[in-house]
Image 1 (cartoon, rainbow, N blue to C red):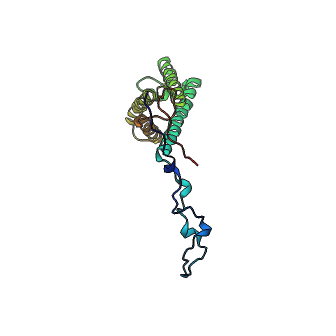
Image 2: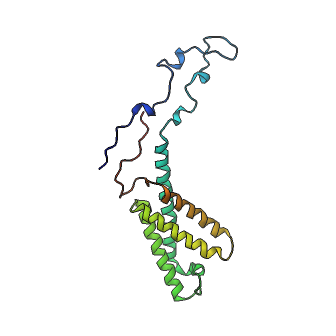
Image 3: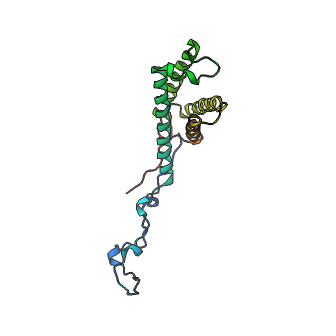
Amino acid sequence: MKKYPPPNKNRYQPHTKTNKTLKDQPVKSNSGEAGSTDRIKNSPSLFSWLACDFKSLDYWAMLVARIVLGLVFAWFGVHELLQPRLWTGYVPILSPGSTMSILGVLGHGWVLVVLATALIFGIATRIASATAVIVMGTIILWLGIHGLNDVVVRDLGIFGLGLAVFSHPHSSPSLNRRHPPAKQLVN
């Protein structure tokens, strides 16, 4: 196991010039008078409440991206399993009402549900996101042959989200993760 150095606690504290409070610090106002109480100009930063580790933001963004991608796959997978006849029109080559197209939709629905489960719960996230990219790529290729429409554009967005989750080196909290989570904001 890797050992990680302890976090630098001072790194996450808002930056201040001195230990004095803002009331104790004299500031020049627009009128040039010394000692006025123009605290906004003297504040360390108007956005000091945003002082946090960007790795932590990256961590939470990837967690949200992975779960949202899983929810999208779950939505479509469940719908394909519950009403496969509504989806047979998207199956290439086969006629929409055939038994083979219904079986294809049911198989695709199960693949989406398995991918959704893996992405939401963080099970083999790299493999699941790579499979999601491949699945969405094939859908885009088959639907894109007939021209660009709203379904292809939607699927391009899902493809991009899957690619982002796949390309991230550490995919947020997952069941197969062996390293500690990103550093949190210390108060």
